[in-house]
Length: 83
Image (cartoon, rainbow, N blue to C red; front, side, top):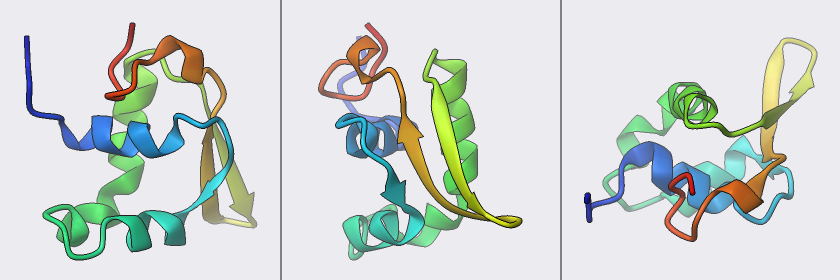
C-alpha cells in the first residue's frame, strides 16, 4: 500500500468537505510547498479524481473555471483515496 500521497490525493483532501473551493484557494493552500509550481495543472488532477470515482461540479464564469466542488466526499477517506 502506498504511503506517500499523490498530487491528486492532496487536491482531493481539500475538496473533502463537500463545499465549493475557488482556484485561488488552491493557490493559497499550496503556496510555499512542492505543489506550488504545478498548481496550474489543477484540471489534470481534477480529471484524475474523476477517474477514481469522484463526482466533481465545476463552477464557471463564462469560459473561465472559478472553482470545484466534490459532490461525493463520503466515498473517499481522509487521505483523499477512494474507499
